[in-house]
Structures are given as structure tokens and as C-alpha cells.
Length: 437
Image 1 (cartoon, helix red, strand yellow):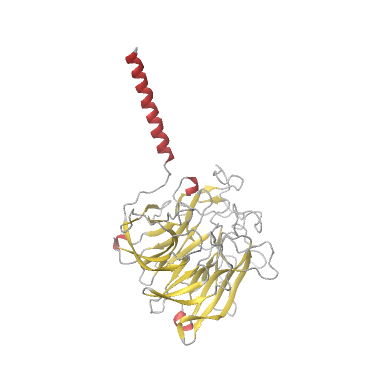
Image 2 (cartoon, one colour; image 1 turned 180 degrees about the horizontal axis):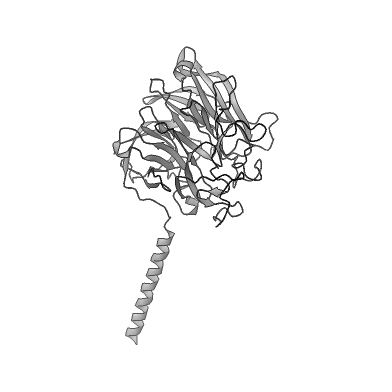
């Protein structure tokens, strides 16, 4: 009897162990890659508040410019930096604990070497006549350098190109980029809040509403007295309906985007909500689904923490909804991270990475810096496979900072911008170059 009791107890123990192991396996975040590729981070410079963009004008000088969210653009000369433009007096006052507004984007005119023109994206205070309960004004402006000094911008040369009021602090988009066609591309968020609903949101969601600028990629011709609409924009000839500036739509918050000029392909990272993060190849006139879909999954604002089993697979004009090329679970649903950061196809001297797509995530945590770098393999069929990069000069192989943006220089080498704080405060912002391990 005792031997039988011991045997039964042993069997029950094994069953309990199996159950525990099963629960543990089921709790492991899905789609979480284990990286084998390794890279080093070369510190270029630091001391920024919240560096969100880095640009290199194609003017033969190889100068580096870093955008700091409170309202300053710095010119970097090796490890030294000088103020190139300061518009902190025109940018909304930021919340040091957390804020998605600020000076967010920079793009140099393709003929910057001769005309000295560049363009910025920033969040301005509300103007007279704007809705009192709105939050800020999305502003795209042109500036010029000083006549006798191309290392300093003329702050009084501002020419406002495009403005529209925005209801909430979050979901601004904020990236500017010139295409090979010479047109300026602008990424905008859906207006903020959550679920693409609330103050200032359309009944169908701003991402789907073609009568406003929010949740879109815009394209304009700035080589005009004000600006012109490119004649091949999808709604260029539809007066009084859709915004003629719209190039693509159906986005939640396309925070960072960039061109692969070798293939003339535009990549945009659309930051997801609670469940799915996505990166898209942006094409003219296409609908990328938000808020009908989040990634490849259905979305409903009535159940944002659970993907519905069914939803429309077309937009409100019966157009196809385009799925992303990269998708992963948000950390809020036991996934990888809270906000994807789109990067670039690598075309530099590290031949082992040639043709691979570098991207990342802001952080797996809101309270501690757990940003991540990834590398993806392009595919013509379905979602791209990817894995997490390991930093060989990091104590644990991880980034250990919040990731804010990627940049590409004129030699096709890549950079990342980071900070140790979740909000725009302090001076922990850094610029790293990605180099061989």
C-alpha cells in the first residue's frame, strides 16, 4: 500500500511538473526572435534631450544634423556640436515626463547646396480661431541658411508651408523625406487619443477619412510660391472632397519613415495600439487599414485588447487594404515592444548585412529603457522574417536605452538615436553609428 501511494504521488508530481512547464511555455511571448547577428555601437556624440531625427544633406560636405525634440537642430562636427536652428520659442512646451510632440522632423531640399532651403515638422501652440479644446498645431515650415554662413540657419526666414490643428498630444507622425521625384513626403498620425475615436476624430476614423490630413502620408511639391499638388497624387483632381495632398492613408502613427533610394521604395513604421506593431511599404493611393485593421488582424475600438475574428477586408471606397511586410506583437500583449521604429535597407560597407532591413522598437517597458534593434530579410511572399541584433560592446548584448530613430548618411551607413529617459528631459540623448562587431 505504501509503495502504491508513493508511486501515485510520484505520478501526480510528474503531472504537476508537466503542467507547470506547459504553462511556462505558453507564457513565452510569441514571435519573439532570438538573435544570432551581432553589431557594435560606436558613440558619436551625446548630451541631447530627446534626439528624434538625424539628417545628412547631399551637398558634398558630409555634415551631420541632429534634431532635438524641444526645438533645436544641432550641427555635429565630429564630437562637437553647435546650434544650427533654435525654434524652442515656437514649439509647444513639452511634458518632461512623457510627450510625443515637439520638433520632430527635418529634410534638406535636394538642391540645398545651391538654395540653402530645408524643412521642419513641429508642434506649435494653438492659434486664434483653433478649437479651444484641441492640443496643438502640426506645422511644416521652410527655412533657409544665413547668406554668408551655411553652418547657421536664419531663424527669421521661416515660411509656413502647411498647418492644421490636432486634438491630442499623441500620434503626431512627424517624419519628412524627399523622394527621388523631388516631392516632399510628410507622415502624420491619426490625431491621438486611442482607437482613432474621440475629440476631432471622424466617425470612420481619421485614418480612413480622406477629408482631413491625419493618419496619412502626404506628398507635396514645395517648388512653388506656396506649394503645389503633384498631378499624379491619387486625389489630385478631386476638388472639394479628399485632401489632394494625400499620397497614402489608413495609418495610426507613422512615427518614422525613410526611402531606399536604390529601389525608390518608401518604408514606414506604423506604431500599433495594444496588440500589433507593423512596418509597411508605402505606395501611392494605397489604404493601410487603420482603424479597420491593426497589422494583418481585425480591429474594433469596442474590444481593442482582442482582435475580432471578422472585419471588412476593404476600405470605404471598396479598395483593398494593404497588409504590412513586418508584424509583431506589442509588449502590452506579451510581445516584443511598445512602438516600432522604422529604419532602412542597408547599403553600406558591412557586406554581411547588404540588402537587409534594419529597424527597432522604442522599448519593451514604459518605465525602464529596453529598446531593441532588429534585422529583417526581405521576401516577396508574406511577412518578412527578422531577428534581434546583439550588441557585442554591451554588457548584456542589449541596447539598454530607449530607441527613438534611425538615420542614414551619404555613404549608406546607419545611425541610431537613443535616450535613457522616457520623456523629453535631462541630457542622456545619444547618437551611435552601427559598425562591425
